[in-house]
Image (cartoon, rainbow, N blue to C red):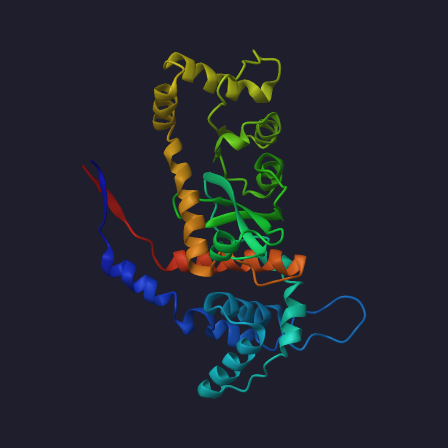
Length: 312
């Protein structure tokens, strides 16, 4: 039986300690840009605080799980201890300005990967907890937001992301994420939910190879549409391998499909660090909150990741 063994525990332990360091999240760069807001077009008074300051505050809120009022108290005590001449925005100002941070996440990751792995997961908006549901039954309709991400399997960083309602399916959102992906991307890996003509067509238009297992009983298109040729090739490969469960497992192994599990690990890391429930009630704030969590997770993975080998 194979076993995974981490070889860089010393470095990885230091990176885990750094994730909780205040100097990582409230850096010298944040202090320097605190009261230098960007020029705002249109009418109205200029902002007193920069977008960078609001992003810094929202980052601290997400990382340390602080409500808005406690966040203000935390920052006030922190700035006083550091003897800095900085003003703290009112908690209502932070909440209002957070809605306009969308442009800060046009590029979550500066890297230009060759491969991306797509998947999605739900984050609870409101509703009873699991214990209450198990004990008393579901009392009201539970609502979720769906977070679609594309990660680089080499660096484990989130490169593209989209937030939708629970009804937004993977195959509907995938073309939009492909358009947002860096031009360097050559291959996208996804589960069977991406095995649709729309996903293959979007990948074909972007000159991207789509690595998705064909569904059972999939029918060859025999060159009727150019963007489905790659799907036909996958179907033929599975058929030649035996067209059974063993053939699918072997095909996935030969094509390197096992890397898709890394996106599930990324979701586990995201929910483990920040929780699976959203604190925001406003729709725009919910989207920004998930984007900030993705941004923070990328900062955490930058500090270091486990490096290991398989022991057989």
